[in-house]
Image (tube, rainbow, N blue to C red; front, top):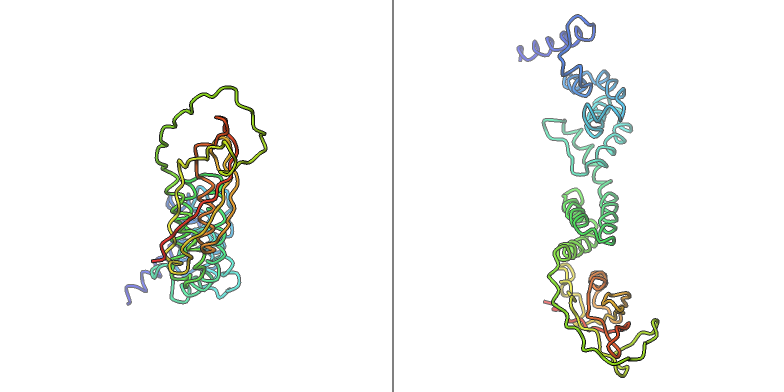
Length: 304
């Protein structure tokens, strides 16, 4: 115990000499104000450490440590000084930058870790919603690699104990979209299309007309890619056995419109509609010419 007290006294004397200019500071300390702030915090000189941290600018953080580290030590100093409201704002900045960060036992006291946990529990649902929005936007613009990465990060966040089981529906959607992103990122090669036999001078159909299998002379669209998503485990047993979805297929075999005619389950319906937009077909033809085509598809699912 005596040796420990002597060691602390020696550190403080050396620190005072450094501040007074009596001893040359190490190069690393001169180059890194953040490192100096860490040393001051470790020596329980919280006011001095906070003054150093408050003097750092965002532009300096790129060279001397990132903004997250600055806010981490700022929050620790503020909590040690009993400035709770300011500390919560600093903690919130840390969590916004890195939602998975939690101070370890070696970094902070139980009281400080409890403060981090309290703020983190409040913030995580809003952060999760923001991350879902960003992941879904990447999925909608067909950036499947990016959306897959973002949905994986979101699921890791939703599984965090501090979420306390909240946003279960969001987890179902994120899991479904991750499956779709993964499957669509490496699509199976399309089979060769057989060229239709040439026909003599057929009449040209109206470009805005949409045909169906009931129209005479129309050869319906044939599925090339029509993958149906799996029922998420969370809603198995709650779905109907069958549903109906109607798609409108353009002259290039792409799905231009999707309409749900018979629901299976609200969560699964969302996944099914999203998947249907990526289905591909051999276009329907009238007298050998590709035409727009409307097709109703019955979807059967297992409720086991």
